[in-house]
Length: 97
Image 1 (tube, rainbow, N blue to C red):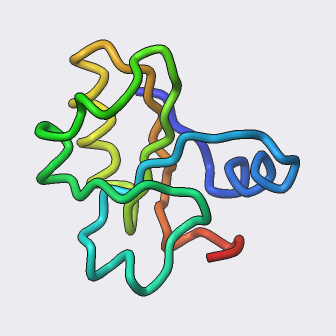
Image 2 (image 1 turned 45 degrees about the vertical axis):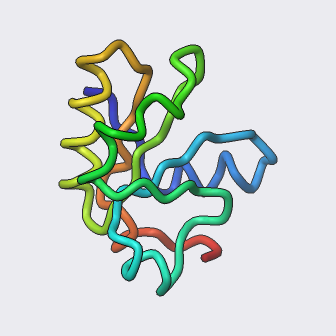
């Protein structure tokens, strides 16, 4: 499983790079703040909403600490998606929310 740091994601966003971010936290967690541009698909719904994702794109998975996003990354990889886990999650995020 590929991983990226929160700092790398922040740098890419600050450089204007287009990222496909998926936040797998629950809706009430996301209400407290999320990375700008991230799409919220709670972990329990990833299986049912993966048809909304484009297999030709690369996705960065985000959660609170990196555990749920790791599970989502492994799940989507098993279906042929290009996904990267953001290690440490929102807990280590220092960028805009």
